[in-house]
Image (cartoon, rainbow, N blue to C red):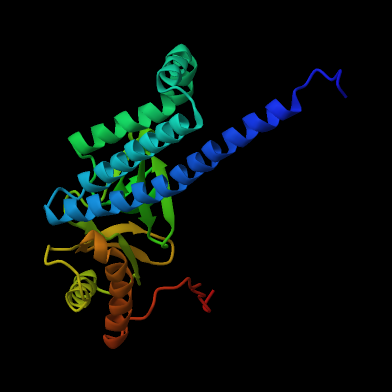
Length: 269
């Protein structure tokens, strides 16, 4: 045992000296991250009371959170014994590798800044981004959070959002609701037009804008009408289903049969 090259006593002493530092670093990380989240929430509430733009609030809140957590990590590293200057030198030496690895992340950050500056969408807007349709909940440092119409939370990286086509359905304040109604050939179009118009007026949440009710095309079995009322983005589906319901009810009340495929047979032949 005396010839063994390892100094177990010295190793054990070094380990016992290092354990408290490691425990202290872990405690700093746990408590520090908890405090960072708490401070971020306090900052968010303070920004809300200040009346700051709701688009900027989540961005600043998440930025404060990121900076505080970086500070906690650096503090924990210092407790363990990692020299901050050496740590910085290590980061500088690995700058190219880190830059390549974080190029996408930095791009998302830059895109987030551009979204806040040029405002292609705001918090609360109904948008269609990369095939995802929903209302904007938050614009964060790296991501945009939306809730889809079927109540799913979707996280879209800001760089992805700005790299494609963004459709803002809330920008104009109203949407056209596209409906189609089949009219039998033997019915009078002007009469049907007035019935549908009256049904739309009875539909809750339909805007007062004059709706379009015109012939779209002639099918083999009926005339297809284009019915186009207007609604706010929030009320779109209420108007969509409500209008169909009232139109069906109004046509039935006026004795208008539903158009359906029919075959005419001439018995004389």
